[in-house]
Structure formats: C-alpha cells, structure tokens
Length: 379
Ligand code: NDP
Ligand code: ZN
Image (cartoon, rainbow, N blue to C red; front, top):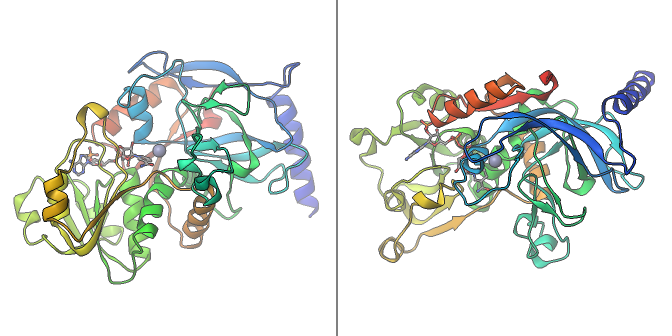
C-alpha cells in the first residue's frame, strides 16, 4: 500500500513537470505527423483540450501501427486533413483525472482504440455499438471532436492523450504492456466478428490475410477450439501460422494449396487490405456458413461480390464489421490477458525515419506482425 502511494505521488509530480498546462488548460503535446498525402513523418507540436471533469489524461507508452494508418496516410479512403498524427492503438498510464472520474486513478494503465466519443443515446450507443453511432463516432484521429470545440483529433504517435473515461479501456496491471496497444484495434476488430459469427469448438474457420488483424484472429479462433486455416499470399508465414495453432496454411498463389476447400468452412474472416477474389471465399463456405469482412482496401481498388455470387452461393451470410463497441473492447482485452493472447510485435523507436521505414515494411509484407512505437524514446 505504501509503495503504491509513493508511486502515485511520483507520477503526479512527473505529470506536472512533463505535461504543463497553458492558461486555458490546454495541454501541450508532441508527436509525429505527416504534412501531406504520402508524406514523411516529422516531429509536430500541438495541444490537446484540457482535462474535463469526466476525462483522464494518459501518458502514451506504446502506439501500434495499423494498416488503417497507412490507408489514411496514403489517402486511400478519400481526402485527409494535415498535419495528421495517426495512431489508434494506444497503451499508456493515467497521469491526471477529472473530478468525476471513478474508473481510473493516477498510475493505472489505460488504453485508447479507434474512437474517443459518440452521442451515447442513439439506438447503436444504447446497444454498446458506439462505432455505429447515428450522430457519428468520433475517431481518435482524423476526427472532429464535437464535445470539445470541434477540435481536430490527433492520434497516438504522440506523448499524451486526453479522453473521456468512458472511452478509455482499463488495462489490467498484469498485462504485457509492450504488446497491449495493438489489441485496441487489431485485437477487437478480429475478436468481434469471430464472436458475432458464434465460432465454437470444432468449427472450421478461415482467416484470410495473415497480418496484424489476421494473426490475432487466428489466436482467438484457436482459443475457442476452432480448426483454423490461414490464407495469405506468401510462403514466408507458413511456419508462423502453424506455430500459432493453425492446422492448414494456404498460399493463394499456389494452386495446389487451394484444392478441396469448396464448401468446407463454417466461418471465414477477411482482413485483406487489397483487391482480392471474394467469390472464391464465398464458394468455400458450407451451407449456413458466414463470411465476415473487416479488411477495407483503398476505395479505388475495392473488391466486390455480385448479386449472382449472393444468389448462387445462397444460404450463406455475408457481414461487415467495424472494430467493436467499448464494452466488447474491454471484454476482448480481459479475455486476451486471461488467455495470454497477444500480438507479436516489433518495437521501434519514436523517430520519423523509423516510422517511415516501418510503413514501407508493412507495404512490402516485411512485418511480423505488428510494429509498436515506444513513445518514451521520443526526443
Ligand atoms: P496488415 O498489412 O498487417 O495485414 C494484411 C495481410 O493481408 C498481410 O499479411 C498481407 O500480406 C495479406 N494480404 C494482402 N493481400 C492479400 C490477398 N490478396 N490475399 C490474402 N492475403 C493478403 O494489415 P492489418 O491487419 O493492419 O489491416 C488489414 C485491413 O483491415 C486493412 O485494410 C485495415 O484498414 C483494415 N481494418 C479494418 C478495421 C475495421 O474496423 N473493419 C479496423 C482495423 C483495420 P503481405 O504482408 O505479404 O502483404
Ligand atoms: Zn486499426
């Protein structure tokens, strides 16, 4: 107890010296931004809104690099605003709390995923599906925070974040903190559709795209007792898939690997970030099988299913899924820590060159399986 009190006091002191407030209470922040489409990462100083009564301030320890960050930097999903600090896989420590905050205290671990606010009263919000908020979920970056003077949100490749406690995730003290950040997007985005599909022991599950999301999906499906087949475009991840508990690996560029798979799967999850043949996966579903889609390629390069696919492959279901609600994200995190399910991460230093290099490696398929930036190494 005594140690804890000392730790808290120390952290409060650190907070006051590290994250000074300006006169209007705004908190100076620094991080890495791109200043144009496909730009390089450069240091960027900005500020975040003051810690409100219901907010917590987090010192960011680790930030994951999600392929969605690349899609944003490359303007794959439409026009962006600059400067842009990406990052929606955030793990850190609480350094300040508003007076109404009850779930967090200074010194606790806390995480932030893809969203930081929603209306809280629409049908979606009332069903714990804030990501589908009728008034629009507020995204962690590339968002407009209508509850804080329409502030343009900036993400986790930075030193600090201020967030409403209801949108922060509690990270258990026994979690492996270097690996937690990617759970807040890659983890929940693969966990949620696997749960929605009702995957259970003995089911035959396919995971298409074996990267950040895919390798989490494999681990969740295996943990539920499913027999898992991994689909990817390279030979290089075959052994990794088997090590993570998959029973089969399909290199879709190898015609031999694809034989005998039609009508064999109860559920297939696609995390593929590029153009691909969706019909092929539809044909692999059993009657009553389900196809869950989370991979979101560039709008100019979008794969599609035709009406004919849906009719001739009838008696199967197709659904898309966006991250997961806050309640489910907490459930996923607790489940992951309890079952020792973590991403495989490569920790990099917080500097522009390292982040640029990491982006290139993701594009070139050279990452196993998620880059995480150690934000404390920022100079
Ligand atoms: P990664 O780049 O880490 O992983 C993608 C994987 O797919 C890589 O292993 C890649 O191989 C593989 N791949 C590429 N093309 C094919 C193909 N034709 N067939 C099979 N595998 C293929 O990306 P993430 O896992 O971070 O993200 C995946 C997608 O999910 C992105 O589009 C991202 O924006 C989206 N996403 C969606 C969310 C949602 O809420 N729905 C949330 C988060 C992300 P290689 O490495 O060899 O290129
Ligand atoms: Zn993401």
